Image (cartoon, rainbow, N blue to C red):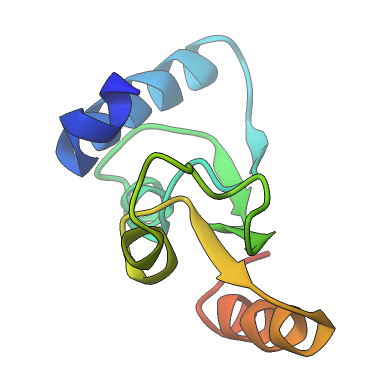
Length: 108
């Protein structure tokens, strides 16, 4: 879990290097499921970072106590952090609500 301690700036730098590798390998479009936040996609779209076109979910939605929860972390941090890869939801209604919110933010 060293990636958790290293933080968002290092993860973003690694993502930009990965995007360059994808373009150099001939990829023109990728599907990115919960791996990179919206600002990585925006940097590619504006031309600041070379990379393929990206369709991204931005963050994944996980049921409470599901695959998006790292149990060694405090629940409030996982549930409320903007830097965490997952959004926690309990029940069908909350999943729909959080899905709509992500779509409004540009998820595809």
